[in-house]
Image 1 (cartoon, rainbow, N blue to C red):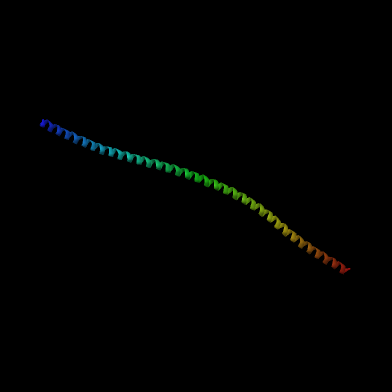
Image 2: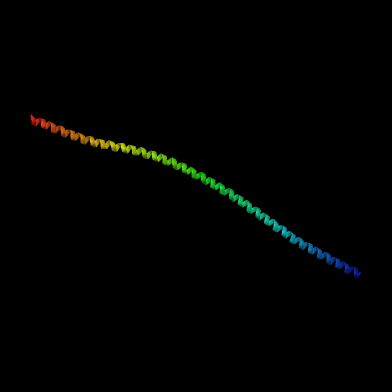
Length: 128
């Protein structure tokens, strides 16, 4: 009986050692699987964030380009309207200046003609 007890104790110790070893190996294997899973999840997360970043960068860039082009077109239209307005005002101002110059010259010419006519009448009056 003692011999059987010793054998049972030895077998029990061996089984306990096997259970402890297997559970230890299982723990290490589980930790390894979890580490691999964590690494895979982090890689997938990095790839997803990279794709999202690229998508939003492209979207922001395209919207910025659209805004820039829209502003350019608006500025071109505003410049065209302003230029047309300035040209119209400049034409009106030029017309007014030419009229003023012609009016002044007309007055001067009328005064000169009046003086010449008066001189000629005086000469006619003196020659009589």
